[in-house]
Image 1 (tube, rainbow, N blue to C red):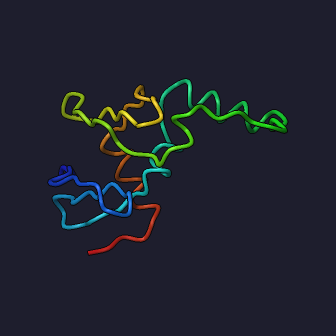
Image 2: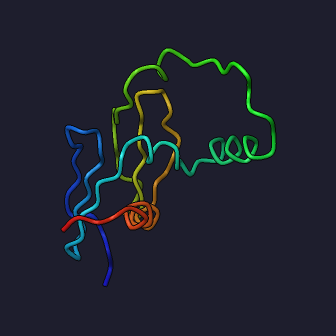
Image 3: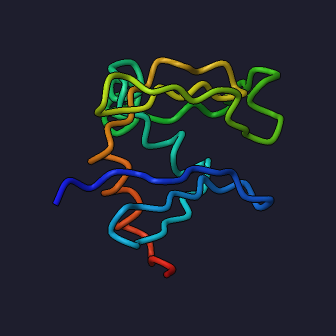
Length: 110
């Protein structure tokens, strides 16, 4: 069976709701989605954070102080979504398999 989303929405709580064609429903918090960004710069940043000391006084951009939102979400071929977040980040390509794995890592609701 080819698993794919049949419906996408953003909840009032700030979760990306995904209804899948096999009947499974996932609610993925936007913070989880953003933190899991699979783009090269985010992967490199995560790797550097693991291998180095954290900044004592990190500086946040203005966009990072506001509640996270999805500003746009577009399909990339038939296999992924490009998501633009309100913090200015828009280079992550979230494959359908990756979104399913993120959702499966959290308890599902049917």
